[in-house]
Amino acid sequence: MAALCYMAALSKLPLSHAYPFMGITFGIVLLGSALLFNEPLNGYKVAGVLLIIAGIAVGSQGA
Image 1 (tube, one colour):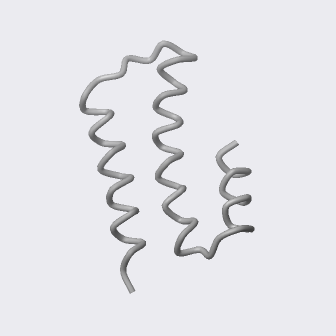
Image 2 (cartoon, rainbow, N blue to C red):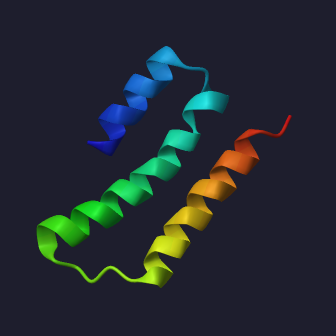
């Protein structure tokens, strides 16, 4: 599912704008595992995903 979404983003956007969508997939996996498989969701996991997303967003803004 993530690969299909990423390919759709690449077909519509340049790579520098589409790459941050890779960070969103970490959040989708975290939420999906909590909802579908009753995985424990704690502050460390949420903070880790937020750091990944922020790092990719900041890194994609560079020249």
